[in-house]
Image (tube, rainbow over the protein chains, first blue to last red):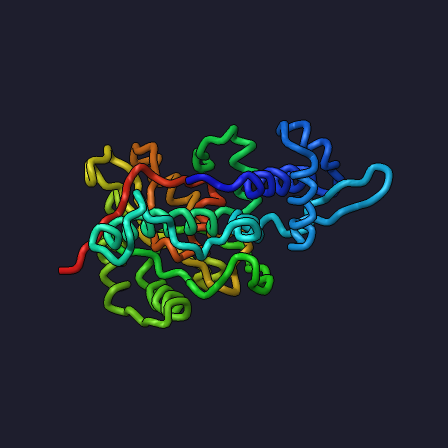
Length: 143
Length: 166
C-alpha cells in the first residue's frame, strides 16, 4: 500500500511532535531530518493544525506541538485528512467493474483495503511511539 | 474458535473517562464467578450466554487443565474482567503457541490497567506451559479491542483468516 507524500509527511510530523510532548518543533527541523521540502511540509503542518492535531507557536522558537491525546488519536485520524479513504481501489489492469473480471478484482482489492483501514484505525499514536522505541519490532509480552 | 465480543460501539477517542477500579487481583475463575462473567459479557454484547459461559468454565476453568486458562480480575469479589485462552499445538500449521480467545473488562472499570493485568497473567501462564508466542483473532471492525492488543505490542500475525458460506 502506498500513501501519498503529504500523508507520509503528516504521519512523521505528528509522531515527531508527539514524541516530544510540550516541546515546540520547527518545521525546518522536521524537513531537514526527513530530507523534504519545507514548503511542502508547511502545507501539511497547516492542515494538521486545522485538524487540531498539532498547534502552532509563532515567533522566535516557534514551531508546532502535538495537540491531541496520543492514546486516542489513531493513524487513521491523520491519514483521512490527506487521503480519500472512501475511494474505491482503482480497477487492476483497468478492468471495468461491470464485468465479471472487474467485479472479482474489485472484491480482492476491497479486501486489502478493509484490512489496511482496520490496521490504521487500531494503531494509536501512543502505540506507534512504543513501536518506535522498540526499533520497529513487535513487543515481547511483559513478564 | 470464538471471536471477541467487546463493545464495538466504543471509540478509542470518544469515551468518557472511567472511574478508577478498586485494585484487582487476577486469579483462576471459580464456579461462583460465572454469574458475574455472564452479566459482564451480556452488558457489553447485549447477549446473555449462560450456557456458553458455563461450558467455557467447564472446559477452561473447572478441570484445571495445564494448557487451558480462564482467569478473572477480582476486586473484592466483584469481577472486573476476564481472559480465556489455551495453548494449541500445531493447529493452522503453527508450532505450539498460546491463543487468547476472549478478554473483556467492565466498561466502568476500563482504563485502569485491568486488561493489561489480565493479558500479562495469561501470558505468564503460557510461558509456564512452555510456549513463546501468543496469538489472538478478532473482527477487523472491533477497533476497541484491536487497539488494546496493539497497545500491548501485538502485531499482525502471518495468518489470514478465510471463510465461506455453507
